[in-house]
Every structure is written in C-alpha cells, then in structure tokens.
Length: 81
Image 1 (cartoon, rainbow, N blue to C red):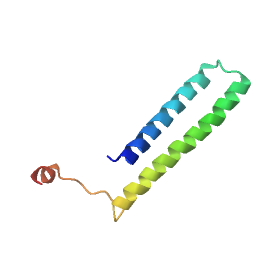
Image 2 (image 1 turned 90 degrees about the vertical axis):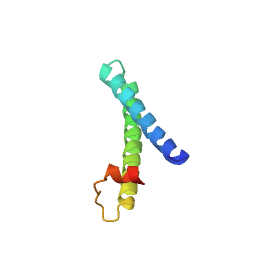
Image 3 (image 1 turned 180 degrees about the vertical axis):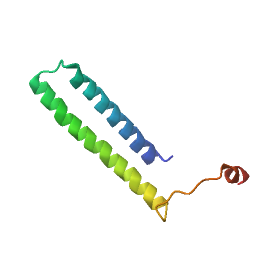
C-alpha cells in the first residue's frame, strides 16, 4: 500500500473513531445545550468526511473494474504466479 493510500485509510479510521467518541459523549447526556450543538456540528463535518472517503474508495474500485463487476478470484492462480 502506498504512503498516500495508507494515509487516506488512517485518516478515515481516525475520523470514524472521532465520530464514534463524539456520539458516545452526546449519548451520555452530560453535555449542555451549547456543547451539544457544537458536538452535533462537529459530527456532521466528520460524517461528511467519512462519506467522501467512502465515495472516493468506491470510485477507485469502479475504475479498477472495467465492467463495474467484481470477478471471482482463484487463489490457486495467485500461488502459481
């Protein structure tokens, strides 16, 4: 995996983790109104970042498959190569 691709995966994983932590904080009920609104706004931004990363990954997969269909992979063929 290239450094850029690895960084993108790490960024996605990090963003998703931040979003999960934010949801836990909000669900705890310990945040006041103002803090809840700020957390919600941050959550929307994090969600959009994750959606963008997933869409980019989907587009890459589509670009790698000419007919937009994944083919079955014969693992024995890989070992013979």
